[in-house]
Amino acid sequence: MNISFLGGAGTVTGSKFLVRNEDEQVLVDCGLFQGLKQLRLLNWEKINLEIPKLKAVLLTHAHLDHCGFLPLLVRQGFKGPIYCTPPTREIAQIILEDAAKIQIEEADFANKKHFSKHRPAKPLYDTGDVQRTLPLFRPVNFNEKIIVSKFEIEFKTSGHILGAASVYISNGKQRLLFSGDLGRYHDPLMHPPEAPHEVDYVIMESTYGDRIHESIPSLEQLKTLINDCWKRKSILLIPAFALGRAQNLLYEILQLKRHSMVPDEIPIYFNTPMGSDICEVYCKYPTYLKINSSEFAEDMSKIRFIKTADESRQLNQQKGPAVIIAASGMLTGGRVLHHLKAFGENSNNTILLAGFQAAGTRGWSLATGKKQVKVHGNYISINAQIIQSDSFSAHADQEELLSWLSEIPKSPKGVFLVHGEPSASDELRKLIAERLKMDVTVPILNSSYNLEP
Image 1: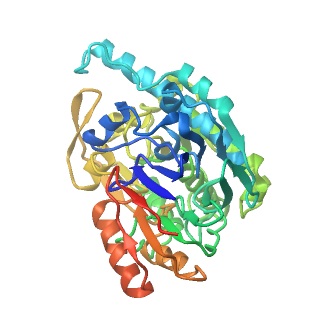
Image 2: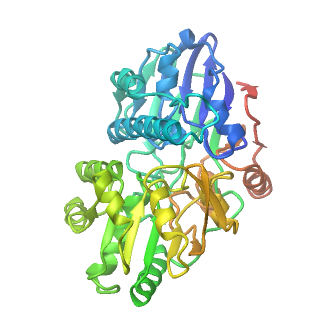
Image 3: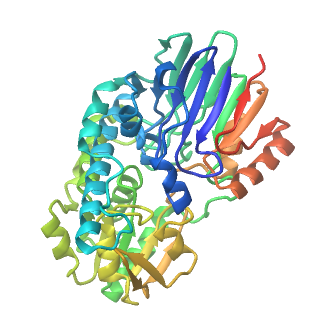
């Protein structure tokens, strides 16, 4: 077999891994590039593969950096099946429809305000492209083996978010394992990632390959920040991924209220219609959660969900104390940008960056100490207190990645590290080579490797 790294190499976004067996091909993930402009520009380029030979797409999970390029792949001629778990199928529909809607709205807003260099500004794809993509999805349960041409495929839980999977691919002679995004071993909602089975090659994420997450639990950090917000009568603004991160945050905040560790009176606003829809999907799949699903549904009923644009605009007038959770998690778009403009200049407020911030995003700018960020064509000042914490991360840290890989029964012939910034991947490479004595490669974008049988 041969593998080509069409995305997710040298960066945490744009995951696309092409596996070839003779003249037949499958693509693992089909994500959007995010962050730095030179990466985002790659989304406008035609994908570097022969689409008629592409037998299927295997989708590990529904985050945009793993599924967001699918409508463009379909626009370029792909008509084959897209295999994923049932929750991923439902969530991907929500994610893709929302992505198209946001792109259309932002293009319209740019044209109205004349701040785009393009005349006219256009969305990357629209709702029509998404509607042509959705019929191609084929749900597959965990541990269910399927045959795609000459490939045998199997999905196993990776623990990252609802429905997230690691993917095994075999041609009868070689077996590959794509880790997908690996979750934490003590996630509040998700089961831990399943230990890897014996394979010839492992393609593994390395998002946090150069660091260990903070020892202070996310629950304790939320407790401190919410109580501080209450005392100061301030706004605690939390940019959060509408999928995964938001559900964990909501659950833990409500646990704090349930046990009287924070004031029950403090309002919690969740301002992302897409995130609200995803909460409903979480309630539909109780066996995928390690908590009681009825408890999760009961907790969600206590959240003040913001649905309409008018409600969102009114929220910008909110006086503290209050907690506002809004997408997107890296401040790349969405309603959180309007809240950033409304609350970011006030030094009494706090902004919690509760997860990874890719280079080039507004979240990354705030995390690196920038006091001004560009929003909707204009720079705004940020005087609010900025707190960055990786305790909320849904990604395994360095030690958890090493622990997962060490569980493989027999050393593979090779390990490829993807989905990480260069420094993170290289640090993890050294540790795997030193501790586990495995042959490790950090591929560059568009590189290809023939996998020896």
